[in-house]
Image (tube, rainbow, N blue to C red; front, side, top):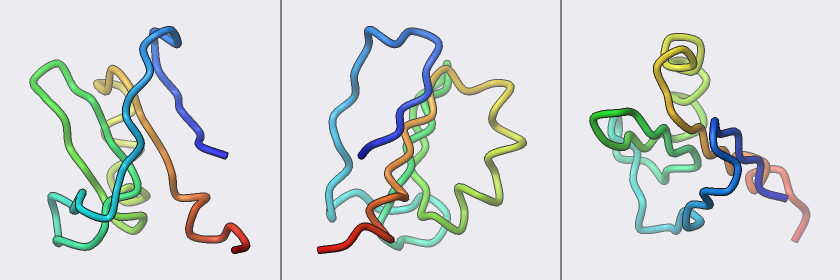
Length: 72
């Protein structure tokens, strides 16, 4: 199940794909942070690292890290 946290729950974002890459390291992105100035994509590691810092300014936090532990 995809976890989406946003100020406006009526706005849905497209799911992340294998083509979406972390802006910090280039690994597959599992989190999209939407800011007033644009979007940032993060792998699970960098999302955890920056979540606290970005929570106050992010308009939306789209988290698909549960896909990493989902059974096939």
